[in-house]
Length: 123
Image 1 (cartoon, rainbow, N blue to C red):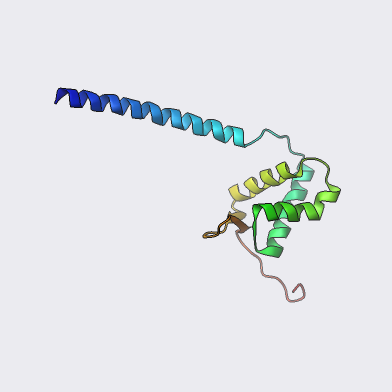
Image 2: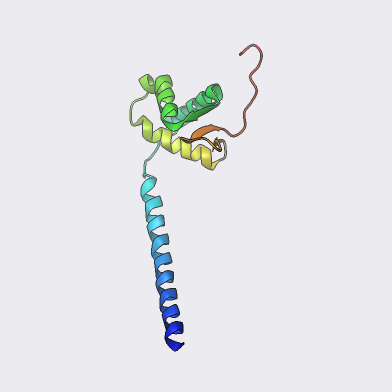
């Protein structure tokens, strides 16, 4: 009986260490996934406006299609790493709850969180 209790304590300590290590690894992965880029505010705003416009036009879109459509819209006017700006702005829009992941879609689709209705003259 005494050996069983001691073994449970050892396993508990091991599990506690594993949980702490797992959290440290997750935190490190999160830090690595967000690159430290000094975004130009003007370019960031242009990409943000373009992403919102593309989502408004298409209603729902996958990430690769979103990148392609944004590149078609502003790629010729844009110098630099457009994909990193798109990724950063997408994460910002999702964090601010302006853009959301469509539930039940595979692969992941994105849409505007709140959609304005089109006017009759725009249709």
